[in-house]
Amino acid sequence: MNNLGLRSQSFRVLALIVLAVMGSQLPTLANIQTKPTTTNSEAQMAQSRSSLCRIIGEPQGLAVHARPTPTSPVVGGVGFKTEVTLANNSGGTRGPDGRTWVEISAPVKGYISNSFPDGKGNLLECSDQTENPKPKPVSLCRQIDLYAAPKGVVVREKPSRFSEQVGGVVSGARVRLVENYKLIPDTNGEKRDWVEISEPLEGFISANTLIMCRK
Image (cartoon, rainbow, N blue to C red):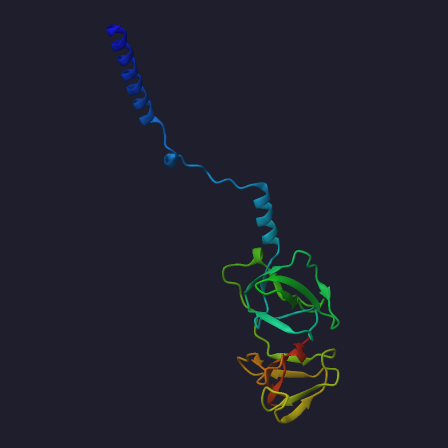
């Protein structure tokens, strides 16, 4: 009985030694490196986002409207060279003024003007841009929108409709913005922006009544 017990104990000790040696050679979970995999759905989503990417090519930036019309409320703006994301169902909408409007989902949700059908457009493909794209010369020419202001616009001394009237501009006529112009919120809190002009007279007019000058 004593010999059997000693043999049994020896076998147990030997088994423990073998397991300890084998265990030291096994890789731990921390040492196992796995390569990240990209699924087909993730690749399709990335490609879809890329196809919806556009860059603002208008040096003066674009106003973002709530609806595809220049008279609808302005909900934000996107600057020159800013990347925007088109809405998935955005194929372009012809507005009442003849311009093509495009719906975007980022960085601001709303509609931006992509110029008139015979123009070059205000949006550029993201994939076509070089590191240092040559900007277009800044145009300060604007035109009174026939649809937004069929009776013309009033030129005010200050950016408020309660300010003194200094003159007027007929519908369809051209005006010139001041250098380094900026959109100025209404001083009375009304939902409109103003812009300063230098020609044909100096003063402020509602920015919502202006469109880019057509060549």
